[in-house]
Image (cartoon, rainbow, N blue to C red; front, side, top):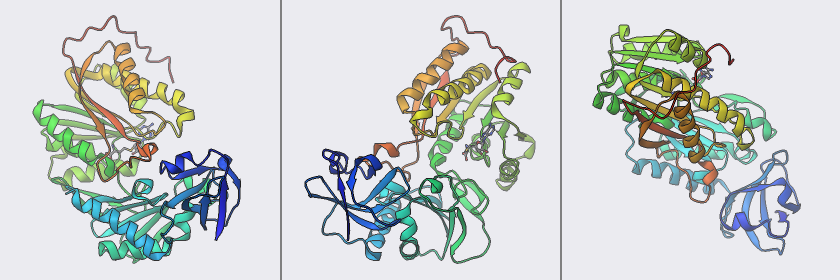
Length: 410
Ligand code: SAH
């Protein structure tokens, strides 16, 4: 068994059960990619069993803090079973469920989503790569599914020194799947969709949106960064008369249009715009358009905390434009999925955007990822999705709005 000895004082985060050790904290020791190592404090005290990752900044990811535990096939069976059992207790209103959410489930680097009878997975760390076959067997045993698709084609694999891999890991067949989310049917393709195929983390926020659209009698909806139209279907289900989905992915928009028909809504109520959101928002302002509800669910603008400042400007910009387009009393659902932008900072950014647009509003609700994307209390870094549901104050006056220079920027 190889041993990793930490520098003096560098054991603190592991003692708090934070599962990562960075390269600079290691005094000596090493291993092969994904090899199980024993991690010790400077004084030789046992800290954890972990996976070694020779080319990553995150050099060690803890599997277990229990010295008596063995890291073997049975270990992965236990962890996977625990994760699956936790989801079963959540009574999720969908057959699209995140079953394994990395660190929060004690399986750093592993993402597994269940779409009806099919699992879609990402193995994003050297440790999960090493144990892939045992993990796959454990997943099939715990779920009764017979198929696992692998989407280990995320950029973060490169940081681990791992190649991009995609294809069936177990089973075979069509990659197109239909799931039920709340009262809606949605389709996805595990081979060509984003991430594992769909954004399950917004499930509860889509249900909330449908409720709010109905409650506030929302008629005109602008769904920005719509992907395959999850929030658009929610809006139609809530009774919206006119819904515009904006995304830069043509295939995603085709699927959004298909979802409108699949769910029995009149396609005349829905428009798909294959365009850049920022440019579209500016054009809609020029055209004098207004919307009763707007959703802003952009991709990750900040890859890490180091990019927070630039990302902040980008978030502020789209939120300011969206505020400008909101009809009096309108509803804004605005999100950030950048881990590097905390909930408090995001609130400040949106507040600044409202101020610049001359718009004030009520904070109806703070939003987060659905509970099958949990954060463990020892790993707050896992928290990534945050959002605000804002109801514009109909007669807002928070000082003179800063003039919008539509042609100047970008
Ligand atoms: N709201 C969606 C998920 C959005 S994911 C849901 O509920 O499923 C972010 C989306 O933004 C992706 O579909 C991506 O294609 C799109 N996107 C990224 N950059 C964009 C841009 N500049 N303009 C428009 N869409 C963009």
